[in-house]
Image (tube, rainbow, N blue to C red; front, side, top):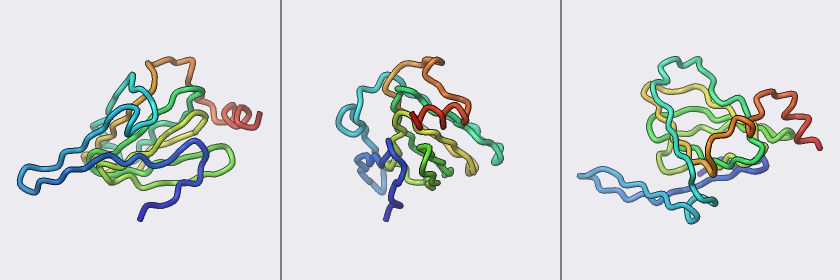
Length: 141
């Protein structure tokens, strides 16, 4: 059973998983069906050999993303300015939507962990909020 998501602008995204014991698993993602936006960017993070690393530590003004752990596990921290929670990411076909104005962190990476992120737009540094105090000011408006 999945832990309820209590922060705003977030939720689970579950992809189709076809199991073939002999030939592995097939996981399918379709834009505008499985993720609630047109996919314009995809990136993945590997070589997380330092278990003390903390990634993320930012929010986005407009960008929407879905994050998956396609190998291993990590802890995803979510913060909407009022509610905070941590979610263990360890299912290859279950992601978390990172909506607008949602502070997020990734930490506690297992050995060999691989993260996959699907994004609604191209990279723009202007969309990032990297200062937590600024984030809190913006979400209170």
